[in-house]
Structures are given as structure tokens and as C-alpha cells.
Image (cartoon, rainbow, N blue to C red; front, side, top):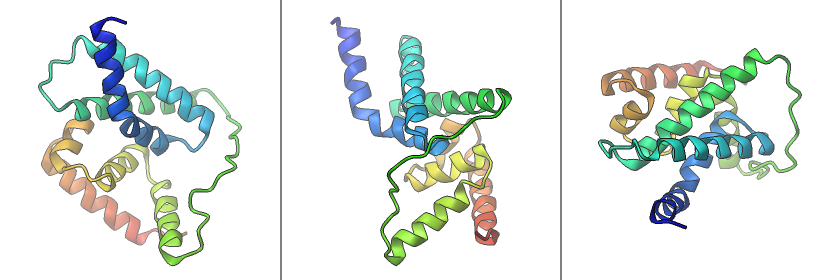
Length: 159
């Protein structure tokens, strides 16, 4: 394994959870998540040489992952009807109030459009407005506006 491969492998190890977080934003199907993860790795590898480190590497990874998942979702929507696979594990099977509130919040978030869902989930991941703006390709002011609008929409939604 040459040095480039070693550095890239280490990069993937360090940011594996970031990549999976984005995949989980767009799908609950484990096979599809694995496919998205693999596609993101391919795109990261192809773009690795052109990454100029003008932004933080985490921001670059989020941006590549988001674009990949958004494109995959557009293709899936154009591709016709899809039969979802059921996942046997429910991460929210706890019955305490906090788990139930979290489950309701994520159900509401899943009702949002893809871009709104991505923005709110990045915010929930603890990213700054600057990082969200860099990932989504929008200004910090627009991030602030969008988050306010999305939060208001979530307050109004009922499930």
C-alpha cells in the first residue's frame, strides 16, 4: 500500500461516523446505506487529489457525502417504484419519554424535504453555521434563515 492509500485509509477511519451519519439521513435500509457509503468512498477517492485543503477536511467529506446522497435520491425517485426493505432493529425501541420524543422528532424531520432535512440534521450533529453553509453551498445568513424556518415548520407539524 502506497502512502496515498495509507493516508486515505486513515482519513476514512477518522471520519467513518460522519459518512454514516449522512447516509442515515437519506435512508433507513441497511443495504442502501452500505451502497451509499461505498459510493461516497469512491467519490472521495476520486476527488482526493484535487482536495486543496481550503476548507476543513470534515467539511469536504460532508459536502461530498451530501452531494452523493442527494444525487442517489434523485436517481431513485426517477427510477420508479421501490420496495423498501424492513430493518429488524429499531434504535428507538426504548419506552422512556426522551426516546419517544426523539422518535417523534426524527419522524417529523423525515417529513421534510431533502435539503431541509440535511440542514437540520447537520445542525443536530453540532456543526456550526459556517460549516453547514460550506457543506450545503449557502451563506451563513441563509443557514440561519433556513434553520429558523425549518424549526418553525417542525413546531407546526403533527404526527
